[in-house]
Image (cartoon, rainbow, N blue to C red; front, side):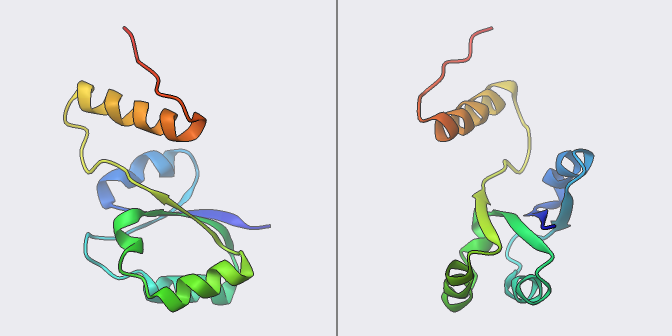
Amino acid sequence: MSKLLVITYPGASLGFRLAGVDVHEMKEGEDITPMLNDIIKTGEYGLLAVEEKFLAKVDEGILKRIRKTGIPVIVPIDTPKSWRGEEEMESYIARLIRRAIGYQVKIKR
C-alpha cells in the first residue's frame, strides 16, 4: 500500500505530523532531487505533496520519468511560511477553496 509524504518547510510540518502524515522537512533552497530518486527506487510513497519552490529546482528528466510511470503522483502545495495575521490566513484558505472547487468563496464572520 502506497503512502503519502509531505515535503515542506520546518514551520509547516507540525500540522501534517499531527494528521499522521509522513513529513520530510527541507530548508528553502535545498535540492530534493536525490530524495526523489530514492522515492522512485523504493516505491514506498504513491503520493507526494511538495512545496512548489522545491519542485522548481528538480531536474526535468526526473519529473518526466515520474510522469511516465505515474507513481508517485506529485501534488504541488504552497504553504505560508508563517501565520502572521488572521486576514492573511483567511485569504490563503479562500484561495485553497477556490482551487479545489473552482469558485471564489467569501468568508464571512
